[in-house]
Length: 569
Image (cartoon, rainbow, N blue to C red):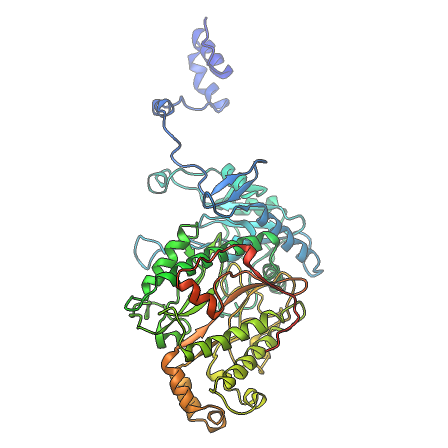
């Protein structure tokens, strides 16, 4: 008999059976060779239609060596997925140095989950859990992972989607897609978590369960792995604490690739801030600033901000986290007032955190200039002093000392600066810490060494989120500020031990012109000093020139670089 050439060898054999009358064996034979059903006509039809792919790999591209990277398109930053593989290797190497961690230990991780808005069928905007992002860079929700400490072998666990997923969310990606894109050793379904742990020969599971987050006081929930109960594998709380400490220390020190991502987020933020400064005018609602910043950031691939945008004008600039749901940047911007904009673009999970303060009219009044230049002097003093080994608690105190000296020269304070420091005068005018670690969270982990907490350092009364010695390749903020907060001013006036240092007439004058001033830079500690990643107008002359229309180029070439020599203030 004749056989069509496109038939497989299995099909040929079955045709032969039919021709000689052995049709009764065909079902058994078909089952034995696991024969696939005939192709549907619809599939052939779709193949014949000359259309472009329904979707491509989207935010994932492949370089000349076919290595995957994340990107939001032309002109945006390429982030190689090898960065996350290197992060996994870094963490495993740190854990292998800890003699307490046994052979066969496997880290179990829970990715961020798609969560409904209360009892509705809509979802909150998804953000990947930061540790999961650090180690895997996965953009999809509801994933889990297992990571073997001994050799860094990683298995990503993904949901198995029902066929109807396609009509709501697009094509279903197979495990092979996840493995190719995220550069992991293996991909299995969530329902196969127990098999995955067995494949890694797990002897003990490590969970991210240790001290509560030092800023929120919260802990991550335990992952719920299919087929794994509390008694399936041993879990040692002390070992989990070690994992928690080590991943925080790993995230604290940024690799060169992570610094590139943070620099990009800073450059996008700087461009957006400058555009906002130029379009602000009296009589405008504050939320126009937020809308403009978000729009300018989205144009460059940053679809999220790392935190709620803070855009107060006038006396509202004294509200540190203005822009929350109860005060949503909704007031009018008065003529002659100061604006304070604290906004940071986020890219691939990494956030910038940048604050600019400027006069709405484009020209500083005498009082506004006095306060602004005091805050700017404190910024320079800290940035010019920073280098490895410098304690950031000392920098917090340095910023206070500089602002007291400068505003004494401006007539606001009287008396000796040392006496004012002892009396805690600056606690009434700068009721926050100088800065914090920065990375995948705007208030990133690692602000204090393992086992150390804010309460252990009573000399710092303010909420200082970063209180340790500087290390090379730490990224953090420098954000001194000076504010006129109503209830704090009232408390100061009623306290003779503090009020004696304040010229009340000068206070009334400046208070009427300035609600608050903050300058916030993102800084990386180098081997000899620091590099300021934030490239925005900073001096009074620069701000007034840019608001008058002067161009302001933004690039990493414009980063200020200091060498830890100190600042003569």
